[in-house]
Length: 315
Image (cartoon, rainbow, N blue to C red; front, side, top):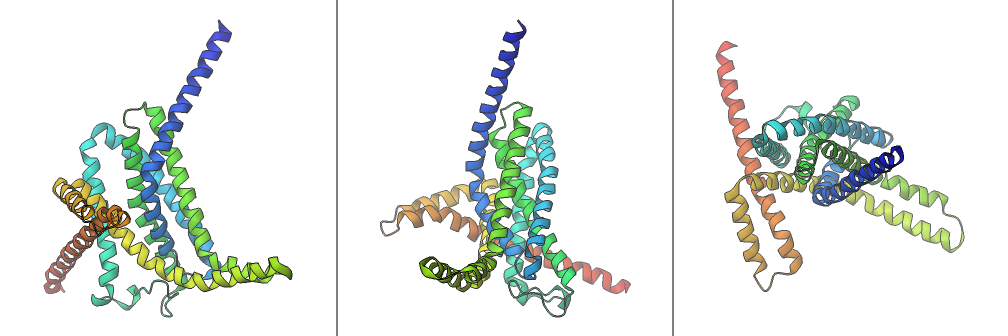
């Protein structure tokens, strides 16, 4: 009896692990799109610091990302269990914030701001700003942005395992959270140290065919790295609008159906290729995100002006 009970337990454990594995694969596929945006955003956020501080900054943001997910997992499980109707509004608030941050980056040079708030993405540390404060500001900004993207990853994963027992939900959520964090920040670390890789190839290139190949590859990497790092700022901002706009449109049925209909119309045009047709929904989400970001920014600036007028007589 003891032997049969033991093997029955082993069989149950194997079944649970199999279910967890299947659900983790499904969740990973569904969150893969967010992974690309998360990668672009966070790689862009940690650029501009000193070369010898790039990896420590990436590690600090990765730790912050793990803390974000550690907060979001139990919160998501609790919200899903007790107030499931709140999931979509909370995600939409996060999406609106991403659009606001993206639009603020675009409008930053046209808005009045203090000298201490000036940011020149990808241009290194401004001379009038303390390097430590600048680095901490970059880390805080990256962790703040990661919170929104982590919330979307957790929400998508939770939707995948909604019908599973609590134990399996927790296991899959923890697995996806760890997988996404390691994957994103491992690649971010590789991107920001790309130029160091090119230098290493040049320094270790010896004679012969292999040496010449390493020299050419090293030079190509060094030539491409600056352009890639500069492009991360643009890619990261576009990703903000795509992710934020996508969250908002999925929470607004009229916008979601309107974008789906527009994308279908674009796909029906003979001159439009299959790739462009596939990109149409994401582009329309991004356009919606730009408009939403502009509206939120106008509202924030209006509130600031009203508060300034209210405080002025008291001074």
